[in-house]
Image (tube, rainbow, N blue to C red; front, side, top):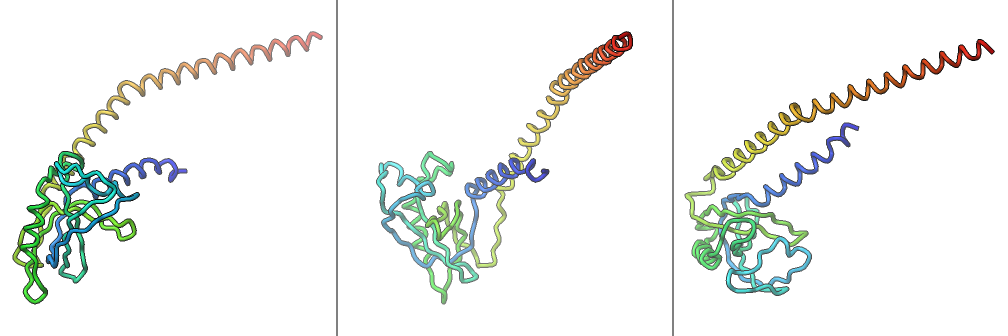
Length: 215
C-alpha cells in the first residue's frame, strides 16, 4: 500500500527528471570525423526534431538536416544533429546552425593526428527511435582528458531546488495554519455529533427496556 501511495509522486518526479535531462545542456569530449547533410523523413519521432532553420519555413514531412559525426576517446561513435532551435523550446535561441557546421567541418581530424573538441548539446541518442542530440556549440580543447564543469546546470538546479523548497514550505505552513485547524474543528464537531447520537441511542434503549419491564 505504501508503494501505491508514493507511486504518483515517483511518476511525476521521474517525468520531471527525464525532462530536465533531455533539456539541460551536456558537454562531450569528442573527435570530429565528418560532417554531413542528409534527407530525413519525419514520422512518429518528429517531436524530437526541430522545425528547420529559422526563416526557411521548412515544415514538410522531410527535409535536409545537418549532422556532425564524432568519436569519443573510448572509441565509441557519437552522432549529433545540427538544427536551429530558434525562439521555440528548448530556449537555446540557436540561430547559427550553418556557422556551427562550418566550425565542426574545420575541426575534422584523424586518429593519427586527432583534434579534440568539447561539443555542447542537449537531447538523447536512441537508435531504436532514430533520434539524435542537437549540437549547440563546439570548441577545441587540449586533449581527451579535459573535464568540464556544468556550471549552468549546477546554478539552474540549485535555483530550481530553492524555488521548490520555498513553495513546499509555504504549502506546509498554509496547511498547518489554515487547513488543519478547519479539519480539526470539523473532526471535533463530528465527534460531538457521534456522542450525541450514541447518547440518544442509549436513552432509547433504556426507555425500551423500561417499557418492556412494565409489560
